Length: 309
Image (cartoon, rainbow, N blue to C red; front, top):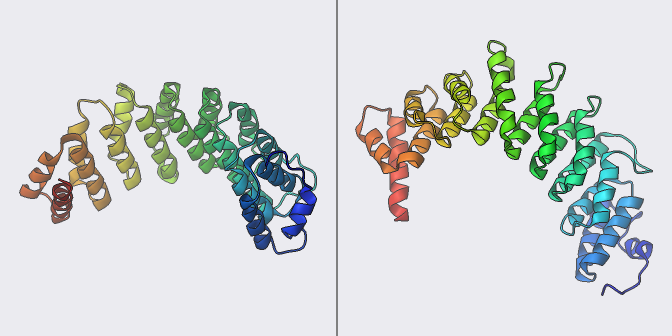
């Protein structure tokens, strides 16, 4: 069907573009998959993305185009992200559309897009939702060129959005570059006493350190301190990081969390210990001087294990 000649405008008029409600238009465009091949569909989607200014329709078509991932579509998505396309104006709906564009761009895994994503991430006048999406996209694309700029975002004392810092930290964990370890450890060490209002950022840093973890004594110190943090999620992330590490002390450190005051922390510690040593820890908890909550959890895991066998 690739040789078929057709008029994009005529096809889309039949879909109701410009006359029908946006939801109906998107459904009609989606139904075109029955009649056209991938190359033709990409052309139809690109025509809409270039000529329509209705955010709801554009959003629907971006989702449809994601299955085809044409090079031309990627270029259009970047223009939408950078607000380079004529006929569109900044608005809340446009912000949501640009976030969707960013997610679609990340699905290409194309390193040529890193420059545009960094531009938006580093623009402090940009909507924080766009910046969050760009940080996440950089992590998912996996280009190590983004490591240094992401570290700079996390370390920037003038960065007002802790959410952007969190997203940049999460991206560093996804990138898996060990050069991020020292800067993240330094942030944790230097911010002691100032962390109460930044618990979410602590969670992301501990999580990232777990993904980046090597046998690093400073990382181990941070994880030990995190096990005593006031935030249960920080403690849980530290447990997971220790579980995935090669530290000799990991098992005993996690075991100490079975006495934690928070049930979710205790549950995660039990699961981590079970992953490390198997049913031995379950039997120890069931027969030992542990809380009834933990005994019930251990019994439940043991019964699931026996059912699987």
